[in-house]
Length: 98
Image (cartoon, helix red, strand yellow):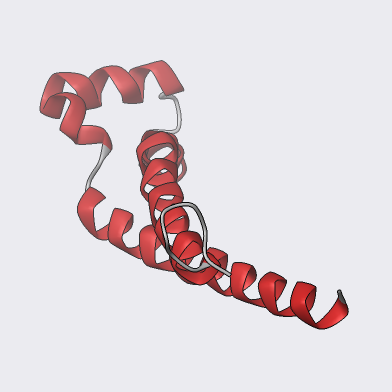
């Protein structure tokens, strides 16, 4: 079975999964950065807003994404394989059970 763009469900799943992984990095990256800074930082009196303010002053927007491209690639490949294989299995099960 092919989809509207002429790609298989496996390919469509891999493409959409990769996009989802990159989006997940964009959304969750700053949250993970701040929580990690709070947990591993030496000064336990700092709050969330202090970490955000210091990071913004020191590095701006990019400061919240250390190693961002590597994380985005990892999440993209992880999500692509997971979603792609899920769609392939779903397609196989539908054709065998229907």
